[in-house]
Image 1 (spheres, rainbow, N blue to C red):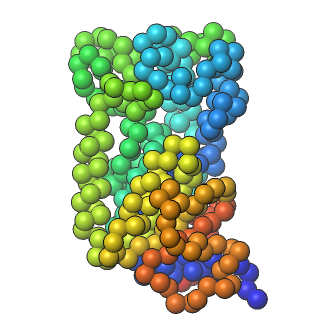
Image 2 (tube, helix red, strand yellow; image 1 turned 45 degrees about the vertical axis):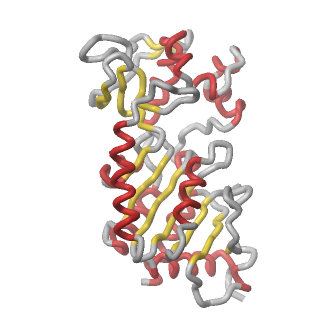
Image 3 (cartoon, rainbow, N blue to C red; image 1 turned 30 degrees about the vertical axis):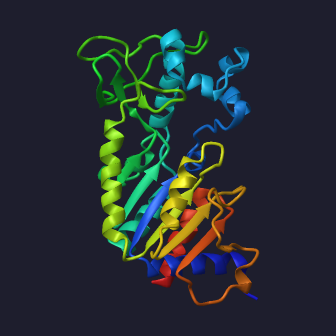
Length: 306
């Protein structure tokens, strides 16, 4: 009997190649293999930032406009440290493997929809006009007073006082000199300027409309259920009626596979040997491996299939 893992990736490759376009949906899990911290649960945040443990703050408290208004130096230590870290880390090889599949086998017919704010898809070479950042970007400032958005200056490094957990160079608006914040959607956020995201989502709608009849593969990577933005986006596209869709869910611990109660059998290593060889119109795959490993295996399987 053939190795179940190999059979699964062969079936995934076959399903990818019968479609003509790809929607990549990505959550925080894809960044972990690049060495970025995991903030899921208090322990993840507290391990990376002991200050929040000492003050009994959660990620919801830290990623909050109230924290910015009440303690801007501490707020900008948190976001400044994250910004510096995102600049210091490179996207892992799985990003590049996925980009090769999009370019070499799908003719650049792809779009990325991500809740990540680090800009690593663009850094890996994905076309910025084919990326939607639904929670905004740490690489852009916004001024609440002027209601403007602009890029963080090139080669910016935040000056951070590690001992006291404060930022010594809080960024200021280039027009009115008021303190600025990242153009990121935070918890309880009424001040987020969403115009940049709205333009990106317009291009996403155009992509889905243009490729609707040709079949779309949805590769969902590292998406959790605590904040299910990415899972809901994946499943809403997968469940569109009268459309050919494939959903590939990559997550070492996928949990409940559906946010909407999708009535499809999940194909994974445990049952791949029992699956019919003939591909059905809509298929849902589950790959319980890291994003880095899974994406590289998908790239090799597609290469072998073609």
